[in-house]
Length: 345
Picture 1 (cartoon, rainbow, N blue to C red):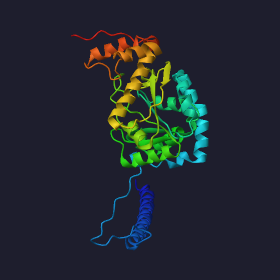
Picture 2 (cartoon, helix red, strand yellow):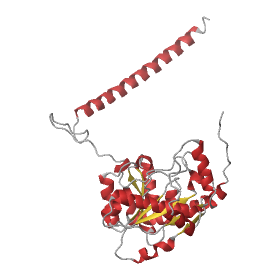
Picture 3 (spheres, one colour):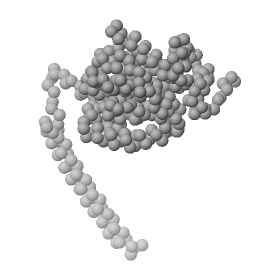
Picture 4 (cartoon, one colour):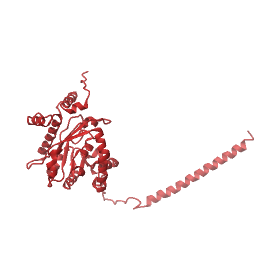
C-alpha cells in the first residue's frame, strides 16, 4: 500500500489538472457567448427586426398556405414543360395501371372545340377518389388539356409548402376552399378563364364518404355565369372502388369517364337554377354509365333517373341500395363486392 500511494497521488493531480483546464475552457466559451448575446441585444436593424413605436400597429403577415398558396409559377413555360413530361409519363402510367379508363362522349365536345369565341371551359365531374384529378388531367381532350387548372382543396393539398408545390407542378392544382369560394379564389379563377385556361372544379366540394354522391355546390355555376364560360358535365364511374375515401391503399379496377354536352348559362339563369341544371346533367350521365344512352334519356324524361345522392335512408340499407344500384351495369360486374347481410344482433 505504501509503495502505491505516490502513484495514486500523481494520477489524482493529473485528473484535477484536466478538470481545471476543462472548466477554464467552458468559462472561455461562456464569456465569448455572453459577448455575442450582449452584441445581439444591443444591435438593431438589420441584425434584428426594427422596433415598433408605441401606438403603431403592425399588420399581420400574409399567410402563404391554404387558399393563399401562390401557384402562378406552375403556369410558367418551364413548369408547363415539366408537367407535360410528368403527365405523359408517370401520371398517365399510374392512371392506366390502376384505373384502365374508358373515355366516352368526346364527340359531344367537337362543336365547342371549333368555336373561336369560347376561351376557357369549366369541367364539372363528380368526385369519389384522389384518382379523379390525375384521371381528369389525362382524360380531358385537346385543345383544353394543355391549359388545364384543377381546383383542389386548399386545406388538404396546400397545407404544407412541399405538398402544395408538388400538386401545383404535377397537376396544375389551384387552391380553393371546400365550402365556399373566397373572393380571392373566385377572382383568380375568373382571370384564368379569361386568359383561356380551362378549369376542373368538383361541384360536390369533396370526395364521397359512402359511395353515393353529394349535393352540388354552386361554384361552377357561379364562375360560368360571371365569365360566360361553358360548363361541361362529366361523370366518373369506378374510382371509388379503386381508392375511395377511407381506403388505405389503392386497388386496381376499371373506370369509365363520360363527357356530356356543354351547358351555357341562359339569359334568366341565376346561380341556383344553373347549378340544378349541372347536377341534372351529371345525374343523366351517371344513369347512362349504368344503362345506355337511350335508356338513360327515357328514364330522365319519366323522372326515374337515380339521384347521385342516393336514397334518403341511412345505414346498411343505404349500402345495400348502392350494391343493387351498381349491379345495373358494368360497374357492378367489375367491382365484385362481397355482399354482406346486415347485423341484426
